[in-house]
Each structure stands twice: as C-alpha cells, then as structure tokens.
Image (tube, rainbow, N blue to C red):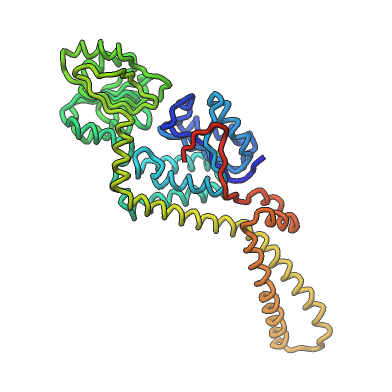
Amino acid sequence: MEFGLFGAGFHRREGLGGLAAWLGLPPEKVRERLAAFQALGMREAVVLSTCERLEIYGIGPLEEAVALLRRSLSGRSPAIWVGRAAVTHLFRVAAGLDSTAIGETEILGQIRSALAIAREVGAAGPILGPLLERALALGRAVRARTELGRLPLSLATLAVQEAHRQISLEGKKILVAGAGTMGTQIAHAVLRHRPASIRVLSRTRERARVLAEQVGGEAGTLRDLPSALIRADVAFFALAAPQPILSASDLQAIIAARDGAPLWLVDLGAPPNVGLDGVLPSGLHSIRLEDLQALNAQYRERMAEAIARAEGMVAEAVEEWERWWRDRQIGPLIARLQQHADALRRQELEWLWPKLGELTPAQRARIEQFAHRLVQKLLHVQIAGLKGIAGDPHALQRLQRQWGLEGDARMALPSESRSGEGEGGCG
C-alpha cells in the first residue's frame, strides 16, 4: 500500500466513458467526494473537477483511492502520478500546459477553488496546501513572464473567437446548450461580440435561468432544443453527455424548417453532442472539438519558444519543491540531533564546573562558548550527512524510527510515476 504523495485523474479529451458525472462538480459535490476519500484514511486530499478534467491529489492510500475512482467510473482506470510525477503534472496543469487551450487562465481559479474547499473541510494540510499554493504562484508567473498569457484564455473563448472569425457574431441570434462552467464561459465571451440575442438551454430551467440572467438572455430546457435551433444563427454545444443529443435525422428536419437560412454549430462535446454523419446538409456549418484542437496545435507551433520557457519554469519549480520537501523531512531529525547534542553539552559542563573550582563570570562564559563552538562544528558534519541522505527514503525511514519520528516515515517523496491498468495517460 502506497502512502506517499500521489495524483490520479482523467481528461475529457480521452472521452467521457462514465466521467461526465465527475466533471464540473459544484462545491457541495466536491465536499462529498472529499468526505469519501477521507473515509478511506487519506491524510490529505484535494479534488480538482473542471469541465475538462477530474484529478485527485492526495497523501494516503493510493490503491484504495484508485479503487474508489474505478468503482465510481464503471471500472475505468485513471492515469496515476506518484511523488515527483504528481508535482510535475500539477504544475503543468497550473501553467496551462495541459489544457486544450494552451495557456488558459481559468484553471488557476479552479485550482484556487479546489484548495479553498479542501481547506474548508480540513482535507488540505501541511503538504497539499503549500503544494497548490506553489502551483498557483507558478501559474501566475508563467503567464506574466511568457507569451502564453496572450493566447485565448480557454477552450470556450477559443471556440467563440473561431466562430466570430468565420462568421461575425455581431447581431446574430446565439444559442448556448449547456449552463455549466464551459457554457458560462461561452455565453460571457459571446456577449463581448454584441449578439442580437442569447438563449441558454440546460437540463433544468433554473440552471439555465441563472446564466441567462447574467448575460441578459432567455432560458429554456433541452426539450426546447429543436425549436431553438430553428430560430438560431449560431449554436454552441457544451454538454457533458455520453452520446449525441441530436442525430443526423434530427438535424435534417431542423434544416428543412429553416427555409434555407444557414446554421452554424460549434460542438465542444467529447464525445460530440451532435451526431453529424458524412456530408453536412446544405446550409449547415460545423466547428467541432477536433477543429479547435487543431487550431490550438497551430498556436502551440507559433508559441514553441514560450512553451519551452514555461516547461523550464515548471522544471525549476519542481526542483524547488523537492528541496522544500526534503528539508521538511530532514528538519525534525536535525532538530532532534541538535537537542540531543545540546543536552550532552549541558550535562558535560555540569560535570566540569565543580572540578574547576572558583571561576570568574568571564571564564565561565569563555568555557561555555568553547563547548558550544565545539558541538556546533561536530554537528556540522552530522547535519551535512543527514542532508545527504534526504533523497534516500529507506535510509531516512531508518533514522526516523531510530529518533522516534515514525509518524513522518510515510512522507518520503518517490521520484517515479506508475499507471493504472489500461490507463490513458493525461499528463
């Protein structure tokens, strides 16, 4: 059983496959998931659930946490990162290097929210708290010091920018199917292009109403989708669904009812929300997730230098984190050694004073100074040796047991990652 630092997760680019129920979780659901992980004996845990990814970072029993994920996701195996690999992956996520839209900034707010909820329920402690704080600081630095900050901010804004490039959104009737995180981002991004109207559809009218009020639009449910598509100019789809909600035959009927008016569909679903088979009907235009991914790949090519610099910043941050981790591991041992040496110094001085007879205060002070300097010089060698073994978890654990610090023995930082069976890596 593994009790070190780990991460485990999925990304929607690999397909939903039971993942939809874990994406874009509201705070109350995140708290429920954290409670489930804490019940497994997790010392610390953070759940990062966005419209693109589900990731768990934890200090505790890795196998049990992965088993819980598999049970909730119909046996699907997550990607797993252990120790240094987990830190590297988290830092790349915060830097925007693992997002569909390279350099997007929304992930920073999502990490901040995940950390706040974990702290609220007592799940983020002395390891994950500082780790996520450092990830956030790195993410801000990457965007401030590289060109990545000039890229589209998210997959949603990339989709809106591409739709506006191909057909101006100004004065258009816009439909947004989905009122989650991505749908919200789309609606707000569209609003900047001064559309004629925005209509928001969701599975529940209340959720659609909340978003519609934010952008001055109308609300409805997915039952209104066919009639809404007949009236819309551009429709954005951002629903977490395991299969298309519109078939090719549905679209044929909708196109026939539009009397030749063109309709643009922007589908961000994975798998697609709209089932398009073969050649598109006349008057129907489509921008799909793979189109946006290809566009993002073009951004990556143009931004190769900025990405390389960001990757270098990630590597430096990981090295800095490892030094912090090792100092934290070896610190209690150094403190115990210093306490022991100081106790011996005082004990030997107490033995010495009666044998020296009457001494002036200055003489006593000089002898105490000599004893202190001697002990510190001897300790210097010992402390250097302790720091030298900080990277060896087995030697560190032996010393922790010897000094009565077994409670910290499980905190050694492994340097390798390992994977679940049949995983699709997302890091």
